[in-house]
Length: 107
Image (cartoon, rainbow, N blue to C red; front, side, top):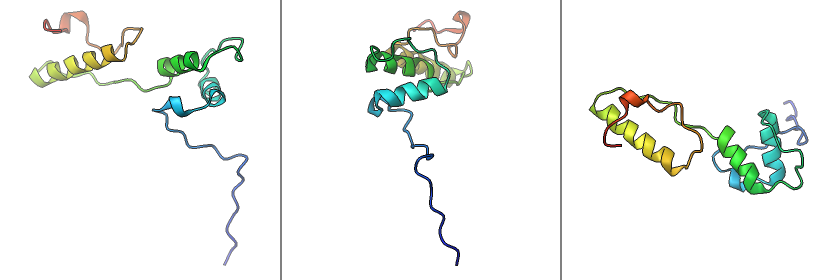
């Protein structure tokens, strides 16, 4: 039998749960943001973890992509999607929202 291959731990990429960036260290956040080519502040030592988390939420975390039909179920799902977007307190308008002529009057 062949001997099992030893894995080199120095080149191993750590497994990250991308949906919980609060658990990452400041250095881990900086590494992920720089890998995704997000423009970081010049003075990284003075940057707080909260501001790095804000950048992470803005550019890295997945956003809803689905556009629903204009039937009864689609309007209901669109309304729920808008409510969830407001709860996230998104600073920018989400491009996956329907155009203003398709928005519901009840929203």
